[in-house]
Length: 176
Image (cartoon, helix red, strand yellow):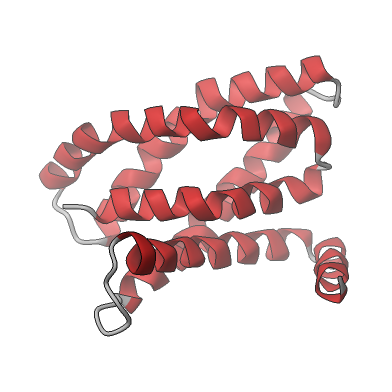
């Protein structure tokens, strides 16, 4: 509980920094889980650079973009009723999620040194499956998130659930 209270104090004092660092940390954790539990690389074969890339993506892309999106979404659809939460979830999953994945996957490819042609081929191969998989998990999570969770905790809640999602995304994005 002391750790949670310290997190809340830090979030209150420095909301943007804490949200971005939380996203980066949990993206990194997702990659570690992907490499160690899904891909079973072992510590000797762990690709530290890949993990650092995912941390960087979390801090430089995921945290700012998703955190900013939640602020915009709350301005577009103010309120916390069930209907408001449903509207937010539909806009999030119908508009934001497809665009986000369409940016995230090629960004990882670019950071991994793929050529534009290879990156495009990888996006065409992986995007449909990633989007469909997204729809298995995120609509229910986001509906609960938009209905039950205050704005300043949403990114943290999503990123905690996203440890599993990040493991999947890391695996998907780094699969050749």
